[in-house]
Length: 360
Ligand SMILES: [Zn+2]
Image (cartoon, rainbow, N blue to C red; front, side):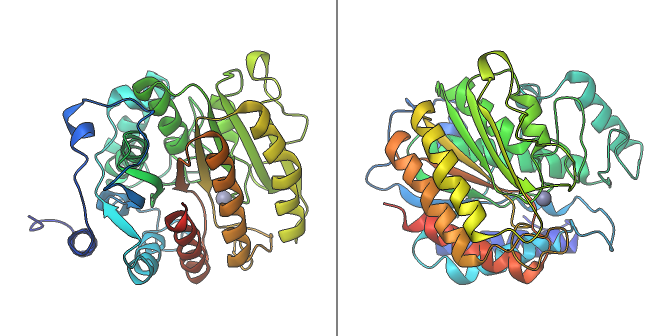
């Protein structure tokens, strides 16, 4: 089954299969058959508390040996979860995204451009600072499809929460423009999938990556069905996300940006979650909660200046789980964004996924 693959991909796939074999791994039959039960079906007997979704094709995107967004990130995450999953979680192999799914958030011209540039051997995406390799198309489809697969699992009751271990990241990708290491906006595609396939009306996206999720903001700027809450470092890439950026039309007030100076940590960021996010969620009443889980907001990250600790991520996770419990039947789908200190990324993900798996 794994013969003929690149060595790195083969090892990862073998590890994934071993993890699946070690867990209970009920196939997502409903999603695979295209028959999707009502989203109101909550996790019942036999459902996992949390599932980790990963696809080996996410390793095929190679940005260069010196680039911080590299396959080793996923190996670090995978190793941390393999140690810490215990009996509380299961690992699921997702399916790649379809063209129809990509077009729910991106223009046809942009999707065609990405495919052409990768096929032509471009080193960098012409729309922004995202490096490319021959495997980037497969990786981008795998990353996006991982999130839509997780959405199916959570909204059909196969899992209460989900963590999507994906790369390339997605939150800087807007409708027509990939940038900031991102190609397609994985979390936005997941939110749209929840709405189109499962009838979810309102989705909350919480973005705690150190960088502003400009792509997610752009996609839902006038939408009105998504509440987007983003904390990020001020005067930092991509230099958007001022508090005055609040959305337009039906979405006015549903884009919420809080920026903090370099060095900010627990008091500022947990304070913003308590003082701003929780009241906003109370008004919005999300039916599904998603997290753009960037761990470059952790202390020691080479691309960020925040000071969050692993214990802080546990608390942030619990706050988001509390919102989901109150409004969304406990449903939380977390999607990996940044995080470039490999040891820090691994330990923060282990704590975060541990909290997702412990949710009741
Ligand atoms: Zn980031």
